[in-house]
Amino acid sequence: MNKALLIETHLFEAKIKEESNGTLIVQGILQRSGAPNQNKRRYPKDVLKRECMKYEQLIRERRALGELDHPDSPVVNLKNVSHNIVDIWWEGDDVMGKVEILSTPSGNILRELLKNNIRLGISSRGVGSVKEMSDGTVIVQEDFDLIAWDFVSNPSTHGAFMAPINESKQWQQIAEECGKWCKAQDLMREILIELN
Image 1: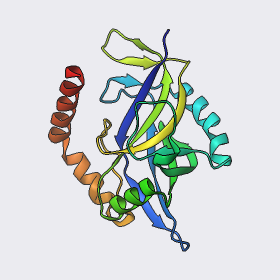
Image 2: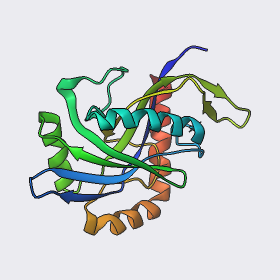
Image 3: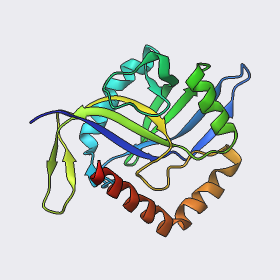
Image 4: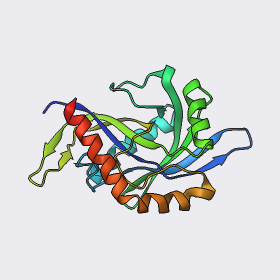
Protein backbone atom coordinates (compact mmCIF):
# COMPACT_ATOMS: atom_id res chain seq x y z
CA MET A 1 0.00 0.00 0.00
CA ASN A 2 1.14 3.54 -0.71
CA LYS A 3 1.45 5.89 2.23
CA ALA A 4 -0.28 9.25 1.89
CA LEU A 5 -0.47 12.35 4.05
CA LEU A 6 -3.50 11.92 6.33
CA ILE A 7 -4.98 14.97 7.99
CA GLU A 8 -7.69 14.58 10.64
CA THR A 9 -9.32 17.79 11.86
CA HIS A 10 -11.86 18.57 14.57
CA LEU A 11 -12.92 21.54 16.65
CA PHE A 12 -10.99 21.86 19.90
CA GLU A 13 -13.15 22.68 22.95
CA ALA A 14 -10.54 23.60 25.50
CA LYS A 15 -9.88 25.07 28.87
CA ILE A 16 -7.49 28.03 28.71
CA LYS A 17 -5.14 28.90 31.54
CA GLU A 18 -2.48 31.60 31.67
CA GLU A 19 0.48 30.65 33.85
CA SER A 20 2.15 33.18 36.18
CA ASN A 21 5.11 33.40 33.78
CA GLY A 22 2.77 34.49 30.96
CA THR A 23 2.68 31.09 29.23
CA LEU A 24 -0.73 30.27 27.76
CA ILE A 25 -1.84 26.64 28.20
CA VAL A 26 -4.90 25.07 26.55
CA GLN A 27 -6.31 21.64 27.20
CA GLY A 28 -8.89 19.55 25.36
CA ILE A 29 -9.61 16.69 22.97
CA LEU A 30 -6.93 16.23 20.31
CA GLN A 31 -8.50 13.29 18.47
CA ARG A 32 -11.14 10.55 18.68
CA SER A 33 -10.65 6.90 17.89
CA GLY A 34 -13.06 4.44 16.35
CA ALA A 35 -15.83 6.78 15.17
CA PRO A 36 -15.90 7.96 11.55
CA ASN A 37 -15.02 11.63 11.12
CA GLN A 38 -16.52 14.01 8.57
CA ASN A 39 -14.09 12.62 5.99
CA LYS A 40 -15.53 9.16 6.78
CA ARG A 41 -12.12 8.11 8.06
CA ARG A 42 -11.76 5.94 11.18
CA TYR A 43 -8.64 5.65 13.29
CA PRO A 44 -8.50 2.34 15.19
CA LYS A 45 -7.82 2.84 18.90
CA ASP A 46 -4.87 0.43 18.92
CA VAL A 47 -3.18 2.40 16.10
CA LEU A 48 -3.72 5.73 17.88
CA LYS A 49 -2.56 4.27 21.22
CA ARG A 50 0.66 3.06 19.61
CA GLU A 51 1.27 6.45 17.99
CA CYS A 52 0.52 8.31 21.23
CA MET A 53 3.05 6.12 23.04
CA LYS A 54 5.65 7.02 20.40
CA TYR A 55 4.64 10.70 20.58
CA GLU A 56 5.30 10.75 24.33
CA GLN A 57 9.04 10.62 23.53
CA LEU A 58 8.69 13.89 21.59
CA ILE A 59 6.80 15.37 24.56
CA ARG A 60 9.59 14.37 26.97
CA GLU A 61 12.16 15.98 24.66
CA ARG A 62 10.01 19.16 24.19
CA ARG A 63 9.83 18.47 20.45
CA ALA A 64 6.07 17.80 20.14
CA LEU A 65 5.67 20.89 17.98
CA GLY A 66 2.75 21.90 15.77
CA GLU A 67 1.93 24.66 13.32
CA LEU A 68 -0.79 27.26 12.92
CA ASP A 69 -2.59 25.94 9.82
CA HIS A 70 -1.33 22.60 8.64
CA PRO A 71 0.84 22.36 5.56
CA ASP A 72 0.52 19.71 2.89
CA SER A 73 3.82 18.25 4.05
CA PRO A 74 4.85 15.61 6.55
CA VAL A 75 7.57 17.94 7.89
CA VAL A 76 7.06 20.34 10.82
CA ASN A 77 8.40 23.65 9.54
CA LEU A 78 10.08 25.44 12.47
CA LYS A 79 9.39 28.92 11.11
CA ASN A 80 5.64 28.20 11.35
CA VAL A 81 5.58 26.52 14.78
CA SER A 82 2.93 27.93 17.13
CA HIS A 83 2.67 25.45 20.00
CA ASN A 84 4.18 22.50 21.83
CA ILE A 85 2.17 19.58 23.23
CA VAL A 86 3.24 19.07 26.84
CA ASP A 87 1.01 16.13 27.84
CA ILE A 88 -1.38 13.60 26.28
CA TRP A 89 -3.67 11.01 27.89
CA TRP A 90 -6.76 8.94 27.10
CA GLU A 91 -10.32 9.51 28.30
CA GLY A 92 -12.41 6.71 26.82
CA ASP A 93 -11.97 6.94 23.03
CA ASP A 94 -10.62 10.50 23.15
CA VAL A 95 -6.97 11.51 23.02
CA MET A 96 -6.72 14.48 25.39
CA GLY A 97 -3.88 16.97 25.37
CA LYS A 98 -2.33 19.89 27.18
CA VAL A 99 -0.83 22.42 24.76
CA GLU A 100 1.61 25.26 25.45
CA ILE A 101 1.20 28.25 23.13
CA LEU A 102 4.68 29.50 22.19
CA SER A 103 5.95 33.07 21.86
CA THR A 104 6.75 32.63 18.16
CA PRO A 105 5.17 34.75 15.40
CA SER A 106 2.60 32.01 14.70
CA GLY A 107 2.19 31.34 18.42
CA ASN A 108 1.46 35.01 19.07
CA ILE A 109 -1.24 34.94 16.38
CA LEU A 110 -2.70 31.77 17.95
CA ARG A 111 -2.58 33.35 21.43
CA GLU A 112 -4.51 36.43 20.25
CA LEU A 113 -7.09 34.31 18.43
CA LEU A 114 -7.67 32.29 21.61
CA LYS A 115 -7.83 35.36 23.85
CA ASN A 116 -10.46 36.82 21.48
CA ASN A 117 -12.62 33.68 21.78
CA ILE A 118 -12.08 32.57 18.17
CA ARG A 119 -13.21 28.97 17.76
CA LEU A 120 -10.40 26.88 16.32
CA GLY A 121 -9.89 23.31 15.27
CA ILE A 122 -7.02 20.98 15.88
CA SER A 123 -5.79 18.70 13.13
CA SER A 124 -3.63 15.60 13.33
CA ARG A 125 -1.09 15.18 10.57
CA GLY A 126 0.45 11.83 9.73
CA VAL A 127 1.36 9.48 6.93
CA GLY A 128 -0.15 6.09 6.24
CA SER A 129 -2.49 4.11 4.08
CA VAL A 130 -6.24 3.56 4.31
CA LYS A 131 -8.59 0.74 3.38
CA GLU A 132 -12.03 1.48 1.94
CA MET A 133 -14.91 -0.37 3.58
CA SER A 134 -18.25 -1.40 2.09
CA ASP A 135 -20.12 1.13 4.26
CA GLY A 136 -18.28 4.02 2.58
CA THR A 137 -15.86 4.66 5.43
CA VAL A 138 -12.11 4.21 5.26
CA ILE A 139 -9.97 2.65 7.98
CA VAL A 140 -6.50 3.98 8.72
CA GLN A 141 -4.06 1.07 8.50
CA GLU A 142 -1.25 -0.16 10.78
CA ASP A 143 1.42 1.74 8.82
CA PHE A 144 0.11 5.11 10.11
CA ASP A 145 2.78 7.43 11.59
CA LEU A 146 1.62 10.47 13.59
CA ILE A 147 3.64 13.62 12.87
CA ALA A 148 1.91 16.49 14.71
CA TRP A 149 -1.29 18.19 15.78
CA ASP A 150 -1.80 21.61 14.15
CA PHE A 151 -4.33 24.36 14.92
CA VAL A 152 -6.63 25.15 11.97
CA SER A 153 -9.71 27.22 11.16
CA ASN A 154 -11.89 24.59 9.45
CA PRO A 155 -12.45 21.38 11.43
CA SER A 156 -14.11 18.15 10.34
CA THR A 157 -15.22 16.73 13.71
CA HIS A 158 -18.15 18.30 15.57
CA GLY A 159 -17.99 19.55 19.12
CA ALA A 160 -14.26 20.08 19.68
CA PHE A 161 -14.25 23.86 19.85
CA MET A 162 -11.61 25.74 21.78
CA ALA A 163 -12.88 28.31 24.27
CA PRO A 164 -11.81 29.99 27.49
CA ILE A 165 -12.49 28.03 30.67
CA ASN A 166 -15.51 30.09 31.68
CA GLU A 167 -17.09 29.76 28.22
CA SER A 168 -16.46 26.08 27.48
CA LYS A 169 -20.01 25.05 28.43
CA GLN A 170 -21.45 27.88 26.33
CA TRP A 171 -19.45 26.82 23.25
CA GLN A 172 -20.35 23.17 23.82
CA GLN A 173 -24.05 24.11 23.85
CA ILE A 174 -23.60 26.12 20.64
CA ALA A 175 -21.76 23.20 19.01
CA GLU A 176 -24.59 20.82 19.98
CA GLU A 177 -27.22 23.23 18.64
CA CYS A 178 -25.42 23.87 15.34
CA GLY A 179 -26.25 20.43 13.90
CA LYS A 180 -27.78 21.69 10.63
CA TRP A 181 -25.16 24.41 10.17
CA CYS A 182 -22.32 21.95 10.80
CA LYS A 183 -23.80 19.49 8.32
CA ALA A 184 -24.10 22.24 5.69
CA GLN A 185 -20.52 23.32 6.33
CA ASP A 186 -19.32 19.71 6.00
CA LEU A 187 -21.24 19.29 2.74
CA MET A 188 -19.65 22.46 1.32
CA ARG A 189 -16.20 21.21 2.36
CA GLU A 190 -16.79 17.86 0.63
CA ILE A 191 -17.91 19.63 -2.58
CA LEU A 192 -14.82 21.84 -2.54
CA ILE A 193 -12.54 18.84 -2.00
CA GLU A 194 -14.15 17.02 -4.94
CA LEU A 195 -13.69 20.08 -7.17
CA ASN A 196 -9.95 20.21 -6.45
